[in-house]
Image (cartoon, rainbow, N blue to C red):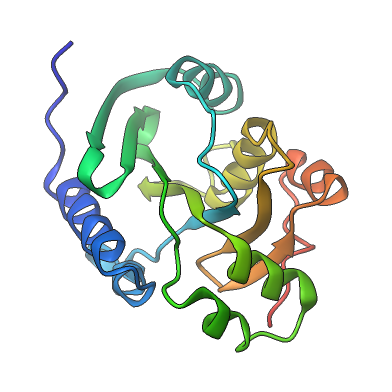
Amino acid sequence: MPLLALTSVDLLVVAILLVAIALGVVRARRRMAMRRKGEPLRSIVLYRSAPSRWSEERIRDVVTELLGEIEESEVAAAPAKKAAFMRMSLSGGRRLLVIDTDAPYMAEREAAAKRFTKPEVQRGVAEHTAWTAIDALGAWSETSGGPAPMEALAMLVARLDDDPDSTLLYQRRDLNTFAPATENVRDEMRNGSLKSFRME
């Protein structure tokens, strides 16, 4: 099945992500923090000991259940970078980008872990070998009646993260806050709550 054409913004997002993976540094991803018209990076990252097992069908089902019909979707892979991408367009200009990567999110993981103080953050950074992220892109109206972008991402992660033994840590990228990957945190996130995400 041919892939749908990526928008210029999505192509830029994917290009920067590939650079980040190739270099093995998180700084490249941080440069994505501002989108067109000053839109901030809205993303939740899962630090993992193995890539996710999320199927395209399951992602579509969960997104449709929580956020409504998917108008367009496409998948792409970068085998050399051990990365896969799935982009979805929803009503009202909302878009989602799912990234799954069999490579560390941070270079020099053990050294990076020492910059943090909380044991669960240190462990997640030091021991992770893969990561998954869900990004909210495009126009998310606060008056649409649906969940706000970060609340929507929390709900999606809680429902999709069905392999908790492999998930070590969650990171909220808009505020650079962390939450332990526990069942209690997932229960909160299922309701759109992000209260367990704390500054380091």
